[in-house]
Image 1 (cartoon, rainbow, N blue to C red):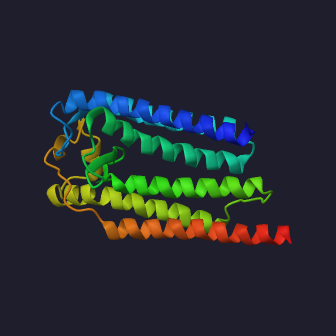
Image 2 (spheres, rainbow, N blue to C red; image 1 turned 90 degrees about the vertical axis):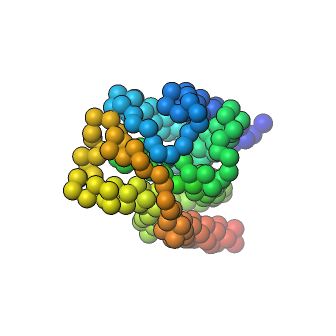
Image 3 (cartoon, one colour; image 1 turned 30 degrees about the vertical axis):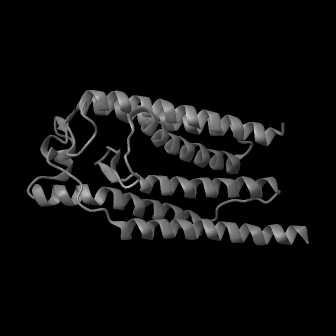
Length: 242
C-alpha cells in the first residue's frame, strides 16, 4: 500500500471516529436538556456546562490539528489534512446523529452550530456545503504538492478565504443577533451572553429566517479563492511538464 493511501485511510478512520465521539456527546446533552427531542426555543444552559463545552470544542480542534501535523510532511500538507479531517468529522457528526437518534429529519432542519460568543444557527445543509469546499480544497493542495508544485496559498487567496468565511459566519449569527437587538434594545448583547445562564434572557428565541444571500455570497468568495488557487497552480504544473 502506498504511503499516501495509508495516510488517507487512517485520516478517514480517525475523522469518522471523531464524528462518532462528537455525536455521542450531543446525544447525551440532548437527553439531559431536550428529552423530548431537540427543538427551538433554546433551553437555558448553566455556565459550567458552557465552559465545559467550550473547552471540549477547543480540545477537538487540537486533536484534529495534532493528527494533521503528524500526518503531513510539510506545512502545506498539514493544512490540507486539517481541512480534510475537519470536513469529514463534521459530515460524520451528522451521519451518526441520524443513525443514533434519527436527527436531523432533513437537510433544511435548523441546528445550533456553535454557542460562543453568540449562538450560530442555520440549516444543516449550510455547514455540509462548507465541508464539501474544504474537502475539494484539501485534495487540490495534496495533488499539487505531490506533483512537486510549491502549492502555497497566496495573499489574495488568503484574504478571500478568510473574508468569505467571516461572511458565512455572519449568515449564521445574523438571525440571533437581530432577535436580541429587537427584543432587548436597552440591553447590551454582551450582557445577554454573559448572564448567569446562557440564553436566560432568550428562551423564546426561535429561528425566523436564514440569510441565504449572505451565505451564498460568502460561499462564492470562498469558491473563487479555491478556483484561483487551482488555475494558478495548474498553470505552473503545465509549465513544469513542458
